[in-house]
Image (tube, rainbow, N blue to C red):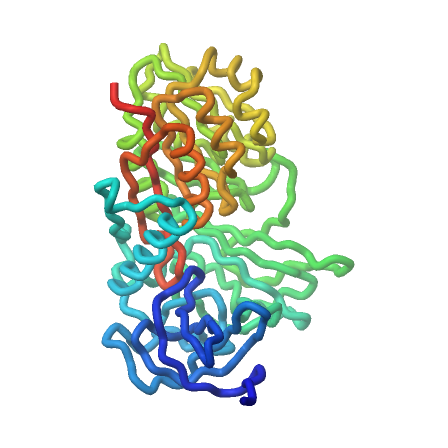
Length: 428
């Protein structure tokens, strides 16, 4: 039998959804991850890559469609085009059900944790605003082709897809005018909007060895990435009657409702008490530290730990009026998270820990080190289901249990989900 080669067309019966936005199909016993398809569909797919363990393909023709399939609102989405969105062809309700299915399977397969056995389930909850799943992204990073034309990368490719509009970009991002300008000498251009204050910025990473000159006619100031902490331009975000300064290329949640929803969820699940010692890891600009400061009161303490110099500088500025909060800049390792420096800053072992790590998660060793301090609870904010499942497994091995798990649709039209998990050592 002749096996197909990249570029060949094959007919496939599409099975379950997989992490990353593809669905699983089989051809002559070979697993194929198919993009632009839906479970239950029959499609004609073009083979895009072949490996020893699996192949990849793009559904280029739908022979039997799912009832959850819709016409993509974006003209740049589809096989061989922009890779920024996974599911423009799927109803929002089905997107959220698929995200819940993937998360439940990751928890079971990687974490050895069955939600039903724990009396829990996963419902991926939409955030306020943007009911059509468009116009939510307040930071968009554009790649720049050699001729200065901006665009977004095609899926699993360094090729740039030029575009005149990104439909998931917030209107303030679009008003900055990045797509209509030429960015000669730039490698990356990031448009940043702060809808709560109306501020906008464009952050440019110059191409190595090339001279960059900012184009004219933009509706936003231009900053160069990598400026020293405290000296770079910034935007400000208002959350629950508090204003946060975030340096131009610093981290902030990209959905305009995310910061408020996550802060409220962390506060609810952590249930801080007066006098608590709280450790806030990967504290960023200080959102969770500020949220937790009031309930612990003047006798409590919140130590916000952040490794990035710019983010730590922002956090110090944002938290300067809260005497019970201390910002510590330091690299987070299994040794430092349970080490004497953080213990001294806290004044003793932590009562509560909040962690919002990057996509890679805390890691097994760091999770074990944190829980060796016997906090009453760990509230874990995660944007990657596999990393969360791995670290929950480590926590279960330390005698903790999953009391609650919330999932939010911070990233409509993509396969990503944000979760907040409560790990408890027991009720008291």
